[in-house]
Length: 632
Image 1 (cartoon, helix red, strand yellow):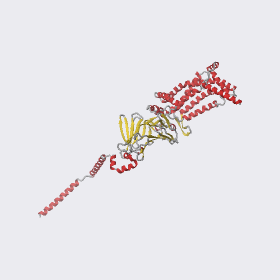
Image 2: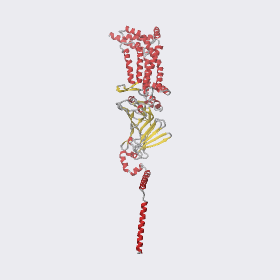
Image 3: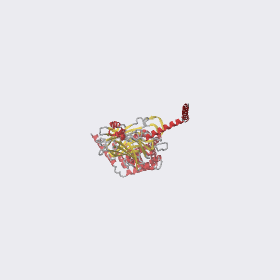
Image 4: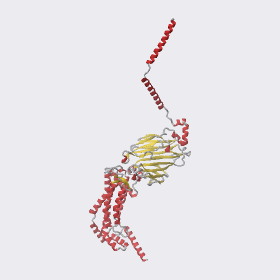
């Protein structure tokens, strides 16, 4: 009995112990919040573990790919040949590297190794896009490519291949090396060097160890393409001044003509300039390119629609090998087409600005540019134009005086010339001879009135070249004109007038009115001074027409041109009217001129000048021939 009782106690103890254990487990059971917290903690630990694993994951190098993925490399070699290596590097992706100074921002892409964005920090587009900086290169409007002829007869384009960038600093200069590699130490390199406060960017092209990869039997083709952005208000004027300029044969300069499919093929080219109206992108080389092909095409067909791009430029230049390698020291210029800025580089770059040929260019370079530069450096540009015009017209006033004096002398002689005309009415040749004798006897040169006028023509033409090219006037305001380099529109028409445009500019209207009164003022004296010659056009009638035609032509021509040029012409004609008024009413005395001519008649006639003498001889020969013909 005691054993059974012991056994029962044992069973009760075991049950009790198990019950206590179950109760303790129940009491220690975690709450739902505790379980949720534990779960979150486990997830966080797992994520941290993954992050650490990723951080310490080894970078896949070219060697790793070669060793671990020979299939991929083999596939790349089928299309890229020796340059498959470049596609295996970490740089084989669409990244860009930025270099910049206080003047420009340049972005260079890994793919192609060329500049995909060039923005000028200190210049904005025309006022409609106020706040938008001028970008010469952006949004795939440009590319640079070298066609690589490989030794295994492939043709590869560098613009489709990936370069490896390395950015360093040499002093204050930023140096970016872009290498298209065929091996660890074999590559084609583009090296960009940007100095502080400079628009010029060093650009070297060289190769190393590629003489076995490339076919070096013939030069490579460097292809540079650019679609020029519109940056100014007047599309028509910007189109007119956007063109390719180039220097060739050690100092000669020229340009590709305007229009569609225009092409030039100069030799020994030292720079190619894709010039816009006020900005330029220029490629310079220390080693002149041999026969190059330069092409230009218009992109503006309808000015109301084609408002983004102006022209398409293409340059194809050869890169010759030296001892089986490329080695070219070149530069890029991204900046304003400003005469002083370009001239400061001492590389003949200022020739891209169309100042005119011969004497017209000399007037601009040695008179207009220095004088206007001095004036505009101290006062506003509008006032500078006015003072500039006054100085030019005062300097030309002695010539104006001589011209008017000659007209006054001819006016005094007009009655006698008319009398000779009546006397020798039936003999025009005799009339001409007697008229020339009268001129000689009176001491009057009939050409004296023409020569001063001819002297003024180069200055007038020079102004037509100077003001549209004056970068200083860009976005400078005066009175109602918000930009002296563009038209001063005061009213926008709801329609387009052929030749005139769809806006009304005020300065051209003022210039047209001024030239009307100037011609009205001078035409009467010219008609009285120059009698009608038999067999010659009726100049009096022509002048009557010109009084009205000239202002209309000026109004049409100047309406789309810059306000600075119109202001200059308005002031020029206004000042000339004032000078002519003073000369006519206070300096030239017709009575004194008449007395002087009568006194000259009493003197022994002067020996006629060479021109008069040759003219007299020609008349005598014609008269002799006429008499001979009559006898026959």
